[in-house]
Image (cartoon, rainbow, N blue to C red):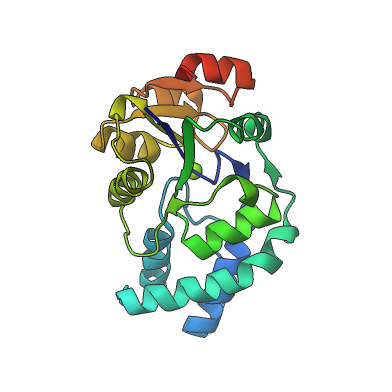
Length: 225
Ligand SMILES: [Mg+2]
């Protein structure tokens, strides 16, 4: 039975140090015709579609799907030049684990993220992690993370056939990741490498809560690989 690992991006695989905010500001300025400061905009665990809807409301516009798409298209076009503006990084333990997973034919790693696919691609490419992922569930259509998790289950099923949800893991850095995992009855691995502390994550009863991703040996043993 194939083990499925679903990876969140921001705060889990990498941090952009909020460099994506610049791209959102540029996109909002172009779409709404005015400068806006998003330095305090909440983003952790939220999907790009939710963030875009909030920006439109803040700018006095109705958050229609078409406007959200327009804003996010602009955002994705500005992202590659925004990322170098902050010293982001790949988070601890990530590259080592992904590198060891490459040779495992009994494991499928996919993305389960609130990013739109173009945004995810820009971030993973910039930080050199794009080689590890060929599939993912994104916020291109779905606004709610639970819906994106359902999409991830369908995607994994299409790729490997029968799924055993006992072998379906969601790795993320916020209570939203834990919640969407519970909704699909997977096992949540919560890493306190984003804005939430280990104690805050533990309150949401993940299957495993850790300060950061450990060595591949410890990770593989816990997950049963
Ligand atoms: Mg995250």
